[in-house]
Length: 289
Length: 294
Image (tube, rainbow over all chains, first blue to last red; front, side):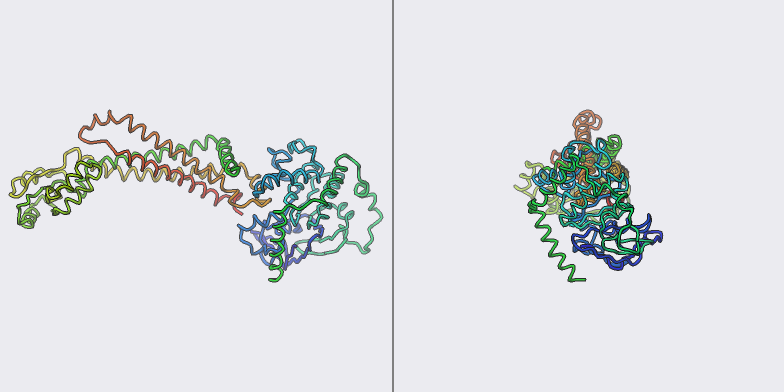
């Protein structure tokens, strides 16, 4: 789904952000990118969303040769990638519903798809009751859930998140992580850059640790810090109680219900055809490797 | 349909947000195109009144059909010290010229078609000094075989020199103002893009095509150009209509009439030109702007 081969990224002015990095993420994986600030995590995310081109090396995203792709084709690639950022990037003049439907409208989706898909995804993030609110009327966690809803409303193959919990308190972060986990379970590949030890340690997914532009660890079911033993330390339960103890709030209940409904959801036709399109192109991409 | 609404609505909203800057750009388009309109009108009026006297010909001698030795006469006149050049216009050429000259006068056209032979051959004379040709005319009239001599009147003479001088000047001014209009439109688009940079960033994130992002801005520039051009044409035509009698009274020797076809045709050209100015302005802005470029 995402493949980087010997990727080096040097920014203007000679700053080396990444040095000879190779990563292969398969469909449906959940990957944490961890490492200190300035290690190259964000550059990796920017390369994966084709915001940047590598200085050297090749990148394939969703079966497409992203590093060779001309700029005008990027728009189409982006429709199979959802993105979530630390600063939410919501439009203050639009309501929750409008912020989410915006992603469908600007890619020219017909109105009936907007009318069915947006309420579904708002339900998934537990914001059905607040769809007419404006971002300033929401808490940080709620704003980030709107942003996740917008990223997912297109049913992307890949969801890229750059420190999505960076501005949120631990309890709120857990809510966001639950939603990302649910999205991942629908088959969407998730790559998330984070500083949050608690989340990484609690979720136990693949961890790629970046330091000074190089990958120093790539471990399945890893913790934030590299430890000698595979077992998690004893302090873990005290650190993330919220993950194992779901609060049965109304939003939570709604969420659980939405998840159940999502499993039975008929995939809409235009999306299905796009996926077929992708599969065939993916085959071509693989053959070229 | 909703796409059109989107493009139109976005453009109008942007223009409302920077009303003063937009006004500046529209005014620049207006002034520059008004000048173009005036120059075109003046040129047309000058040409209508002096079509015969182009190429610095100031005297024309119409020749009798009986004259045998035309080249002899031509040579003789060429020898005069105040004559620069003599051109012979044969009868068939004269008929052809008349057809062009009276293209919008059917009565005369009918006459020509009925009996083309009544149009005489002529000698067209360019004097050495464009202002001084009365002597040539007088001497020509005394020549055998010359039916009639006509020469450019003072009014026409002035009109032509005024046209030549003024046209260079006003075209140069129009080009300079047109460049200013393009720059000002580019500036309004620049500001509109800056005001919406967050929205543009999000549009690109969720996969809106480059054209989807750009078209409203392009449209906005074209709309500004269109408005400026429409105002220029309206003010131009209105002042021509309203001022006609008064100005015609001041210059009775010059016919200020232009055909409605000419007005309509040039108005359309000017309006299209205004739209093009707007498109170029916004295109320039969109190619240099870092929020729009991928």
